[in-house]
Image (cartoon, rainbow, N blue to C red; front, top):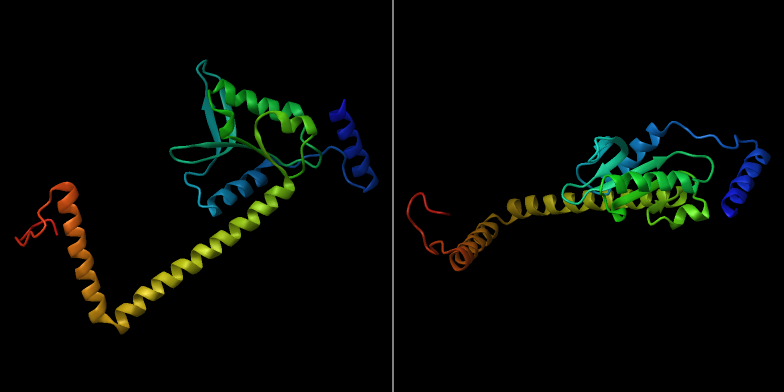
Length: 198
């Protein structure tokens, strides 16, 4: 089949280049790398080695999952050869048995996938795409840092150099907020009593 031919070509190339033909590394390092990637992307509740239990009590381990209300489930394979169809199909079956939509599954590898492995309905990320995502995540992280620093420094500078204007702006915002709560929630718009809403 085409998948077997792809694997044979990859093994031959690895032998020609002096590498191991079908070796794969300990997945722990890749799991931590992927978990850090999603943290850098701003994802919440990132966890590794999560145990799922289906309706029959059977246990399955997910390498990485993230998300609070909408969760995503990630399988990681640190391979030096293309990931075959059966590996992606196995992950797909785990999702199905745990009643998880396939759209919430992600399969990540440091190598690539055989052609048939890309046709399972599971989102796949190969080694090249993984590096691109890490680059984007680093840029996003730097942008967040620069933005936060600029905003914090801008507010501090405004308070230091223009204290009167900042106080007036604060009072204006406070009046507007009080008026808004009065309109939408029925709170008194001019509550001057001690212990009032504002």
